[in-house]
Image 1 (cartoon, rainbow, N blue to C red):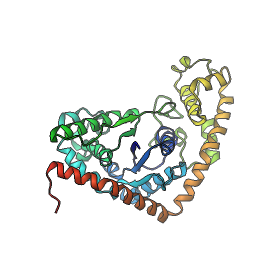
Image 2: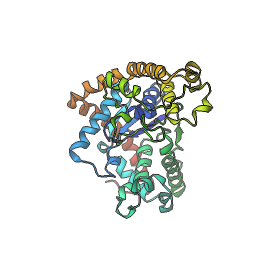
Image 3: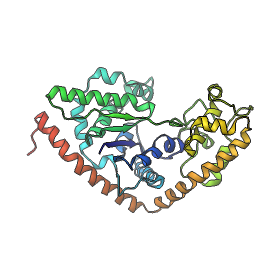
Image 4: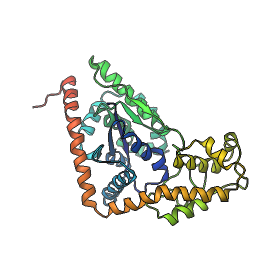
Length: 332
């Protein structure tokens, strides 16, 4: 069976963008693939994290994944720091990857900003660790958003160079899985900005822990323009807030954007947002309730993650041993 690896950072406050952009797709994939899903706490600390919050945020993300429908009995679900193979393979990849490759990574430039000299080495080498995350399990497919495509391409380059350097066909060529409607969910207050937990306004996003009333209120207050919905998709391009809400409706209803445009063509936004609120509550409120319930039993979440870590280690350890043998590293 084809093997999927994907990771999510424990940055807290999971929101609708996380759900529609990644989590919902992970749930669907577990039916047809051998899935390994990881809360990437080591990636998180490439930017300073409050130690008191990091563990709870890791649990919160795990709870959100399970509440959304991931079955930890069927998938491997764990946090990255439980499995040493990630960092051990990352060091080998640090010695395979080229500085020129990392210098082209646009996400480092964006996150480091103008103060690049004060960015952590971990932030710079982040893509090598991401490659190790994937290849420690010889994953064949990775579901990615647009912002991670460049990192996946680097993982492919590292795998190919490793194979060439050592004259082996060891690591597979990893293929991206890119999904359709509403993979990029925008702010409810500004359709030109990505939905984010860091936005000062809580009305800019729907949190996965929001109660039904909060979900409905935020959608009713979502920014729109004064015109009715258009009768074709092309007219949405110049209307970012309208385009965002149509995309959210399409994703939550598992319909195409064209279907939603046809359904609501010429109708007012008040009508549309009322129906969108009902739909969102029906999908998201049960997830929020289950997530809150799971967070009430931290010991159980820890048990699930440890069990997943044991499963992940059982897969990664023999692969890493072969890598050490190929490179010529002795293991007494």
